[in-house]
Amino acid sequence: MEPRFQTNRLTLRLFEPSDALLVQALAGSEEVARTTLSIPHPYPDGAAEAWIERTRNASKDGDIFSFAMVKKEGEMLIGCVSLRVSKSENQAELGYWVGRPFWGQGYATEAAHKIVEFGFEGLGLDHIFAAAMTKNPASYKVMQKIGMKPEDNLPKQILKSGMYEDLVHYGMVKSEIIND
Ligand SMILES: CC(C)(COP(=O)(O)OP(=O)(O)OC[C@H]1O[C@@H](n2cnc3c(N)ncnc32)[C@H](O)[C@@H]1OP(=O)(O)O)[C@@H](O)C(=O)NCCC(=O)NCCS
Image (tube, rainbow, N blue to C red; front, top):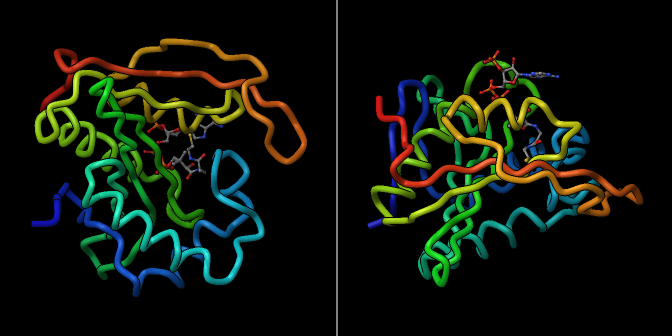
């Protein structure tokens, strides 16, 4: 059975082919792509369909779990939260984006908290970490709010749009999870 979770305001479920247009519209916004490591901008036609198929297959293999954040009210897709699992190290990287109109309302924190719980309790992982550009305080604020601690500063770690960007890593181990 596919993993599916509820939080106060969100349903977290795997992406479906019918989500593609909204994924392209929301992830395709320059403000969302700017601080992410892998979202292309402009977002090409067909890329969302291909990504959804890839990510659904990866979840069957237990390698990547990408969940659509769907507002319970109105059943609207607003973002994505994901775990990229390294089975050999029994750890995963957490990632997320939220459509621009929905920023600043606690949705990333709510979704990330639930998915970290899934990672530790459902998948039995020992360590979950997340990486953010240092120029992206909203992202590492989410990491802080779910209980992650700074683990590493990585200067000039990635090349994005022709500029080297500094990254900060946050993380937590299983025993540190904050339960509701
Ligand atoms: C990062 C992102 C997912 C946050 O989503 P969100 O739903 O707005 O996050 P939340 O509302 O749960 O929390 C954001 C926190 O950052 C804070 N914040 C936002 N902008 C900030 C800034 N410039 N400086 C400091 N804090 C900031 C908010 O006030 C909030 O904290 P609070 O609840 O204590 O007030 C969203 O901005 C996004 O999608 N950005 C583009 C994609 C991206 O960067 N993804 C992360 C890649 S590592």
